[in-house]
Length: 216
Figure 1 (cartoon, helix red, strand yellow):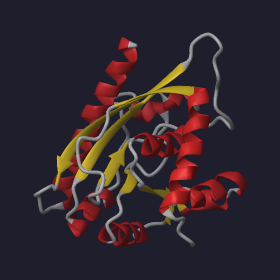
Figure 2 (spheres, one colour; figure 1 turned 90 degrees about the vertical axis):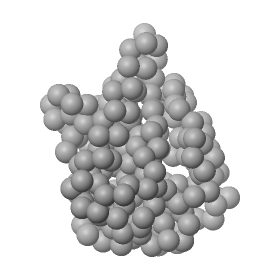
Figure 3 (spheres, one colour; figure 1 turned 60 degrees about the vertical axis):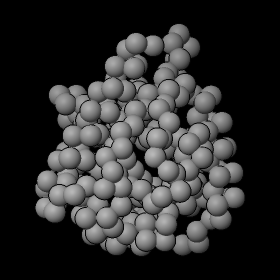
Figure 4 (cartoon, helix red, strand yellow; figure 1 turned 135 degrees about the vertical axis):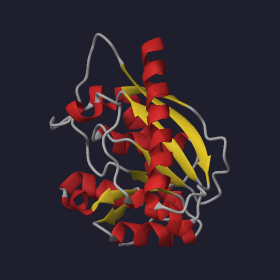
């Protein structure tokens, strides 16, 4: 698959950002780490809106990140074309680790929604997140790149799981809240320990994002 130029990527991210702002406010932390350093961005996943929010955030942060997305989405007529323009990486199974590691080794950051799917509310409501896949920990070990934990809240109200299109409210405008925590290069050597550190960071940031939404 042809990779878009950085200029083309940033142009598409900007367009997605303008579209997303029509649907939702964006309340986000700004990265405190160098965006020129290859980094693994790890987030929770409650909604299809997360894909559009991610592109919007990369625009706001001026960070040409390449998200890892399940290969099946690339076969969908509209979203598939958009994903290609966003430089998204189609992945499936263990190939995801190799694909992401190659991109990181080239000096480009990647974004991973570690649960691997849009998590149903009944699964994430008890703790704020679903169960993560071990692959993100293996990627951390293989690449030795720093990790940025990202907590997202609010997209589940904008585009609930199972709906064909986003849900718009004329009474109360949606806010998507995003909180960040740099975990640096994780020194643990066992995948399970690495995953625990990463996911604890994501859960902490999800709690912070939820608190921010309630305060608004």
